[in-house]
Figure 1 (cartoon, rainbow, N blue to C red):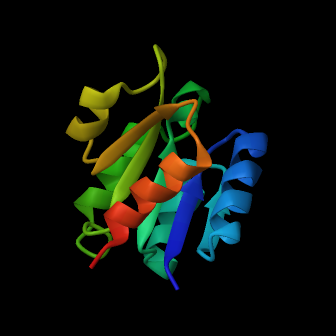
Figure 2 (figure 1 turned 90 degrees about the vertical axis):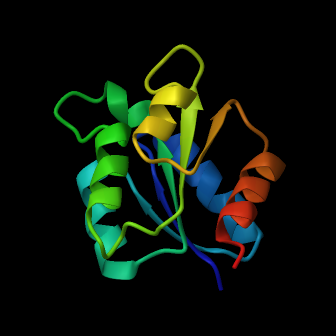
Length: 125
């Protein structure tokens, strides 16, 4: 079963993504901070990580860009495919997402089908 780590500080969006992924038969671990997500990535080595750039608006928290770089910097987690959920005009844009080490990005708002298709592409063997 494909495992996905999802991190976002918006509890509504986090629950929505969890529901979509569970409904598709994926194993989901969700976290609401960058630090908690980094610990989970090390502990469980998910098949894919979905990072919300809304983390960039939370003062004192690890930003999505910093989290992405931290995942890439550690040889244990460096190969985890990363999908960044970007927001038009806020946080990381697509170019900055790729500079931070993301494999793909998906702009909000997005459909469940788009999210699942991106995750499927990133986790193909």
